[in-house]
Length: 361
Image (cartoon, rainbow, N blue to C red; front, top):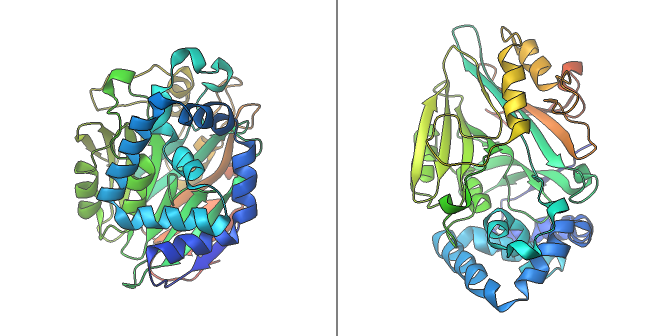
């Protein structure tokens, strides 16, 4: 079962990162030692002269734009007793991997390290956002051993919950705060010439969303994010009963789709942003399968995310490569975020958070 670690209020960002790093030091160390992409690609690349301008630009630009989150990352490294470089590399892996020399790239490790699915609707009868958090179980083996939930209270009184991978900033997966703003994320594959080297990392952008005051503020943060690579953000505001799917790309390019009464399924390709992208058969298959499944109730949504009809590219993944780690469902009318481990069709909840208080079931 996912561990929930409660922290704060902390004096500063460094302290928060340090306490998280200290609490999960064993998990972070184990993840770093077993992460094949880190050990066989990122660390060897970081020792070459050609890597230095890219790593320096990523570090300098993200530290300048988000100094508190940078201090949080430094605290996590020092709290866990691991080299800061290792955490820089795993937090910026999406922004570094496209620039590795092709002859040094291990083809066996070039498969996606995440592949998530979302289904969303805002109708008169229900307002729901449901999300599968998927990962490559080989990078490293058993990803669910290397993730946890952070429930943090900031010095200004803001609190948030974020699903967090060991050694990374919360949250590149899903989370919510006590201002009624929640989000889930889907990776997308822009082509190489759409990526801006050395710009802002997705982990820093999503960490910033956890402090948004609402959906309009979250959208403004994305519009000014200066992202290096593309991403898809599902912004959810329980106070205004509103969901936006925001597809982003480098050079501040943003496309916004407001979710309405027609259910909206998003896998891992751009749907409405005109960006050159890598074609993904897995994503296309999930998109096609979801299109024919019923979407009339919350139970239908969970059945979609639990669907295993396609043996090669199921929506709910159980290996041997990609695996669904957990499912979250955000009910805007009940103002809850629930986390489920195991197939969501079974309806077994690990956590139920109230988004209007800190009650937990």
